Length: 129
View 1 (cartoon, one colour):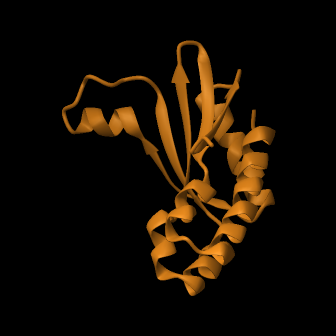
View 2 (cartoon, one colour):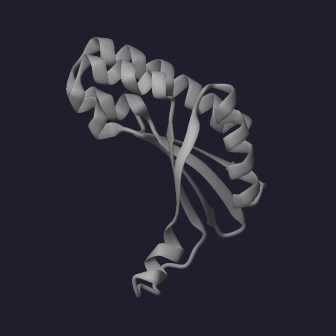
């Protein structure tokens, strides 16, 4: 089982992020924060990585509270991340699967919730291609 789910798109990074934001809202998720990784690295004096690469931290507050009320350590995996990056002429949208992360806690109830969240986020990614 892969730890991630990734798709390719012909959209630019900016177009993909705009579409992601709209699709996330439809499922009560929002983008909490967005990191422009190459810009941050360059700001810190690192010039060796310049490929467009964004990391979005996304959250559904009701789901976050739900998992935290079961096990506070679930917060180690929050918020969920979605990456949008270019490699060659292709833009990729991907996420680490919530089930891959939450399985580390060995809790069947949390795993079931993570499966729901994973299905939702995969649908968001698919609909954002």
